[in-house]
Image (cartoon, rainbow, N blue to C red; front, side):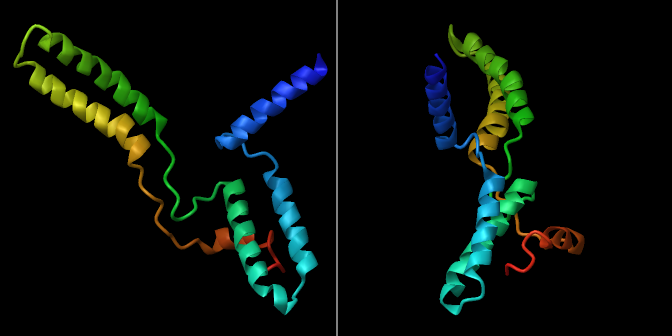
Length: 153
């Protein structure tokens, strides 16, 4: 029974990893990258690879500690999505119910309200999220993260 459970767990973990819901081993990956940087040393033939690995490691550290990364999309505000569905869904159904026997003038303002709620909340938050703008890091933030990659740049 235990091998069956292990098989199911590994399949589920690989599916979650494939769709990006779970990223196990981020600390392990960062630690391995830092060890590789130490092994590369200051050899000139690995300078380009070293620069790419330093940039990648810094990006992984920023993701791990939760620093917003410039250029990535802002997180979905699930409260706006739920609010748009809660307010716009019944309004859209009201338009459908009012117009099921023929056009009713009251369906126009109700339809406009439903459109604003549904387009501004769920559709806007899921499909049209803004990108995070590059912002200069404050000196304190930069110094607090510099000890992690100290000696690796």
